[in-house]
Every structure is written in structure tokens, then in C-alpha cells.
Length: 132
Image (cartoon, rainbow, N blue to C red; front, side, top):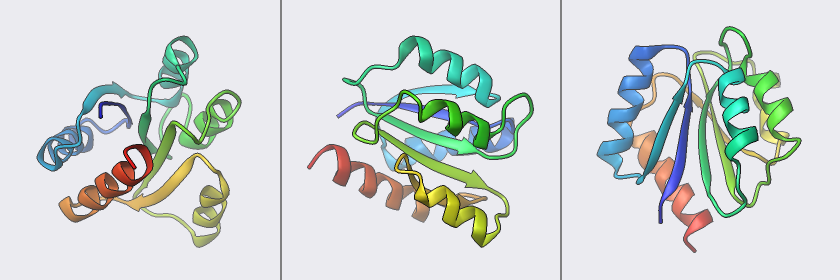
């Protein structure tokens, strides 16, 4: 099955490494990169479709519109049936992690740097949700 993979991350080096990891894991899909939540939410408001499955890698700390603000906008029109958000963070307080995981769109909170093992687990989660 094919997916729309959205990488919403302002660090180009991390984005490059994430793309390489996704390729190595063979998580198939069209990859779209966004440097902040605003450009991503504008894209999704135009392109979102219930027939497409979205896997979103979302950084919390970005300029213009951060991950929290992105989620606030995205949950107004997105459905957990076809969307999975993996929140990326370099450090998070347990209180923030708990709050994030309460959102039905958020599948998991992943601490940077992301490893091959974590990407393989993400792929298993995606396959379990969208292909079974």
C-alpha cells in the first residue's frame, strides 16, 4: 500500500537522515517535506483526502507554526482512520508526552535521533493499522 509521508521538520540534516531511514526501512510512499507547520497545514487544507493514508513525522519545535499549533489546526478536519502522527522531539517532559498521546491522531512520541530500530517499529505499526 502507498502512503503520503509528510516530514514536518525545520532541521535539513535530520530531514535528510529521516528520508534515508525511511528508504532503508522500505516504507513506501510519496514524501513531502515542510519546514514548519504552517506550510504543511496549508498543503493539507488543499490536498487532504479521506482516501489517502497519511503518515506524519512532526517536529514540535519549529518557527512560524510549531507542532502543537499544527495539531490544533489539523485535528479540525483530519480523521484517525487515515492519519498517524509520530511526534519528533529532542526532549520532552512526561506531562507533554502524556498530553500528546491523548490525541487520537498521535500514534507515538519519538525521541531524536531516530534509529533504524524505531523506524522498523513505525513501519510495523503502519502496516498493522492500514494493511490489516
